[in-house]
Length: 431
Image 1 (spheres, helix red, strand yellow):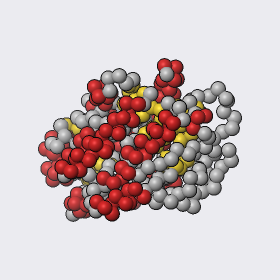
Image 2: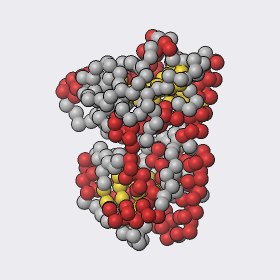
Image 3: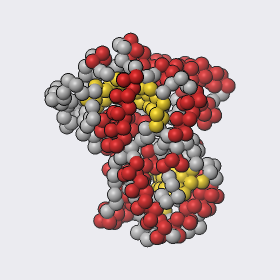
Image 4: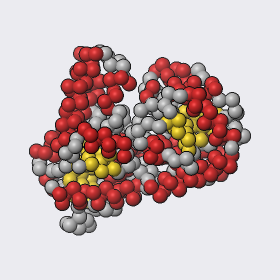
């Protein structure tokens, strides 16, 4: 294949042609020198048009590193930020857009007229990879939202006798969505019938399930006792800090050179514990500067941030985000509901100690040597942890060093991709 020209239309509005395009012309298309005996993998990223975080980033990076161990084509439901994602993640291999058909979502929004994004689940897609579906050995599906996209991908795999596996990003969070989204009872009933049921069917019919953490694997084993499950976590790229860049960033953002900087990265949502961060910020007595980077998904919380003394940057691009991770003295992530967050790994990869909560797989990421964990929804404990680490410079540095070493030893994308490729071979040998 020759490199394809840049896209003129990303297709996120549902009008994209089924014609396949690489997301950027600066990447080298799939090598024609791959041997015929290579394992052929179709890496499928299910994503809403505006989604550029979490499972989307993880799926794209896994596909990029899998290319060292298998013949991989990565396809992603077309979105607004695809070109930006390719640049931010420094991908070395192309990914290809497949349609994001939004007209069912748009119709539902007109009928329901709700501020909530329930209707995003109705965006569907068509699997149109570079080669026929039956030429691949296995498909790997990431993400459950939009659900219609996930179901469509799984159905098309089955229709072409293509075994598929699923990484269950968010399995422990999904049953909690009615509570976290404050759904009315009618929406809760619709969620159970229209979301949970088809989602579980896709997982039940998969050839294998990948859990991000041991705690998620336990959930899957209880829910699907007949299903095969293995743990393959998210990975991370090294991002060690440099002194010169630190001073430049301080000047650009107007951050005090003497005060420690605390960083939060994530969507501005109640589930990420932003309200707990605001409360803890008022309790912290020592001199420090809070910086928060994240999309304003909850307008009320965003307004509170803008009127607080926290420096709120909204969404930050990859280059600046990496610099923020490197500049931060402590990464603070008081999430109330998470599975195996990338942001904590990204902080560790920048040699930044982490203060977070005991939810999901975070206790598997953070040890006593690399950070501090507190119970969720505990602003006082959060503030106390911040003051303890900020006041002990030597401990903070030792934690940062240990965090970097742990990230590189256990969560490098190359080792994660190698393990995943080995699991594919085992899955295929048992089917």
